[in-house]
Image (cartoon, rainbow, N blue to C red; front, side, top):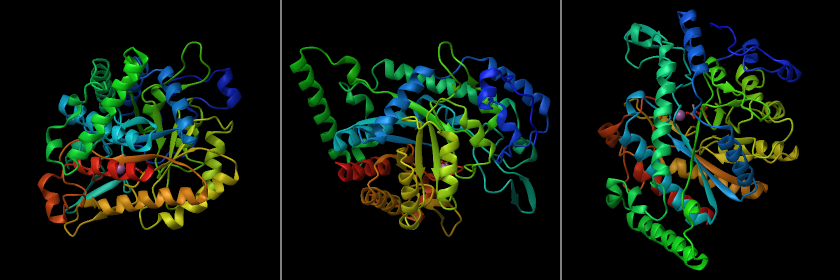
Length: 458
Ligand code: PEP
Ligand code: CO
């Protein structure tokens, strides 16, 4: 694996911590692409390092404060989006429908939980994927695995699978375009609670849950009008909602290039996203990913699942959050419907015994992936729901708070997961299966999931 020169030279305060944006380079880094032309990678990274950031430290600190409240049960985190964003889906339609479904789900949750919801998208930078195999073999031909649009191309030719550093720049630009559009939509009133008509997806009327959703929206609209009547003034800003971004901090030389200091604040921020997370495959105490994340001021997500021992997790927590800063850590567990009853309680007990109070979040997607007879990756709605329901119960029994959920979903009408109110079967999957990586809940399944959770936490 190639390691270019550090983008930032270490200074005195970093040496005190013995950390710099490049200090991960002294640790084993799994899941990094092997670039054939290191000098070209170096050039691209320097260009990215010189470009404006995508997010600000104020937004990051605001998210951290909100996560701290969610850890205490005063807010609820909704994190969701594609498994992997695709460059060719950086389109106005795809961005608005993604925003709409997250907004709709969050309203359902606000209504059910009577709590404010933090919306965090898996978007505007979710372009690099960990893979279980470095290579893929088809009909006797072996090529590098597809690692996300930031790294290589999906076509099965040697040319397309060659890691291309230019893609990092293309990805950074697309993340900026996506975020620019999201911010404009929100500033322009797209997410204004006075105008729920903007959020209807075309097919909301066909959903078996349409009527229930409309009732929820109407009652939120009434609440807004009621508040305005008694306060005698428009509630303005309070009637708007915001969105934060997140992606897996996987590609470390890219993440290093977007790690910056800002005036009048201590420390370093990853300014390409509000909330980077470390995936299950790279969440190991001695891995370079943990070293990299240690020095950031951002709130960090950690995926937890089968194979991670309580002892390893406690070490990671000590490395990433020695000061026990409120809002710093979100622990995202993903054991699967059949593994959570055994896997989660020892983790909760170990963290609780340390007196730590991270935000606990359930990802009911990644432990429930299976293959159909035709070899398609899918997930069953009932398994996803079953894991979530068990998670709420296990946390309640343990005295911890499940303050969030993490989904792979899309606002489109794909057929990738089976089940849900319409009872999609394996045979339906071929109709509109678009994911190149993990299967996502479609629009109706996602809305239904939100309704089921809202009843649970209400
Ligand atoms: C993901 O979130 O897409 C992912 C790869 O998850 P995990 O690290 O939990 O397997
Ligand atoms: Co995934």
